[in-house]
Amino acid sequence: MAKVIMVQGTMSNAGKSLLAAGLCRIFKQDGYRTAPFKSQNMALNSYITAEGLEMGRAQVMQAEAAGIEPMVCMNPILLKPTNHTGSQVIVNGEVLGNMSARDYFAYKTRLIPDIKKAFRKLEAYADIIVIEGAGSPAEINLKQTDIVNMGLAEMVDAPVLLVGDIDRGGVFAQLLGTLMLLTDRERERVRGLIINKFRGDKSILDPGIDMLREKGGVPVTGVVPYMELSLEDEDSLTERFDRRSRGLIDIAVIRYPRISNFTDFNVFEQMPEVTVRYVTSISELQHPDLLFLPGSKNTMGDLKWMRQNGLEAAVKKLAEDIPVFGICGGYQMLGERITDSDGVEEGGSLRGMELLPVSTVLEREKQRRQVEGTIGQLGGILQDISGAPFQGYEIHMGRTAVTEGEAAAEEEQSVVTAGAHQNVYGSYVHGLFDRGSTAGAIVQALARKKGIALEDGGMEDYRTFKERQYDQLADTLRRYLDMEEIYGMLREARLE
Image (cartoon, rainbow, N blue to C red; front, side, top):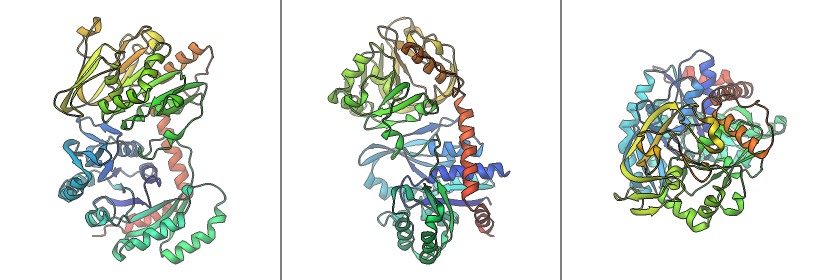
């Protein structure tokens, strides 16, 4: 059997995803075939595997850290919120259907066989499995039917590292309070406590660490500093949404209520001259150098939201002067019309922004596939990325057809362009900018339009950049975690 270790947190966004990724990288570096696992993920950012199956991007990031291809068995259940009280439920990469929170709560234990089957498949592949929990294991209302925290730890017999976020304050109450709310059997599974996102002199924490050992009865396995890394984080509480500064090149992304797959723009954040801002109002939008309309879990609803708060009119005005680029749902919004005869989203038909000569018909069957090729001939400011290679994936409800011009005769197009200055663009491809120098070429084109010169430094391939980030993450964790103690937990786990 594969050895297992589980990372749980005192709350959402305590740093579980990154710590799990760092452990995956460390075990890979030490020569072990390692894989991540999360039984149930709730996220709007998702990924399509080579088999056309859908999974959460957090486990994709962790698989990258482990140096292996993402497999849907790493995340057998994915919940994609459709509103405040319901989600699309995806099991083993396929859409099961939409459920209210109450209905899913009553249904989810029926998915335990799927969780066990996925874990067994991964177990046959890996030497070590690093499991990530979700939220907190001390949620009293969820414990009876838990399939992602202590319920899963019991299911696969995993020792647990419990992580608290000191950056938000109250970390000692977080950790001790969580331990107090666990049953005796659950508490026995917690083999180490981790204080995460610490800034300052660790010696100041020593009295608190002593208290944790004394009152919690669990050793402190490490105090991890706050890390400035550009890796994907939990989309529900991401700090990316709070950035307001502006760099030499200012990129704005419309943050709809149901924004999804905004990881498409992470590649630009590694460039020191570039600022990526997520905006929700005209006052925040101002006049960026490039505007993105990202994916949406409810394209029609989010387009209505933009229409009501004035952002649609602002986008149409900006399109006369700057490039506007829609990805997935944003691409659909830029077209002439969205038709939903089957009631996939809100039913009926809705006029689009009429900036691209395309129309979309929503369909119940989700389009899922990996794609690669080269970007066709583009005009306008982004003409320099014509012919650039890309490798990504499509994931969308509906089909979009070009309605006029030479492009209407083409069956497949990576990017559709139009507008008075050919500066409105649309594509279904997630990851379009990640390969080679595509993102760098876009930034250079924007700089030339502003009459400024940028050095080519920092324009490296995004995948190469992420590899360095994973190594930096692993180096930091080796320094601040007691890895000897963690390996000891692995050696003692699942003794036969």
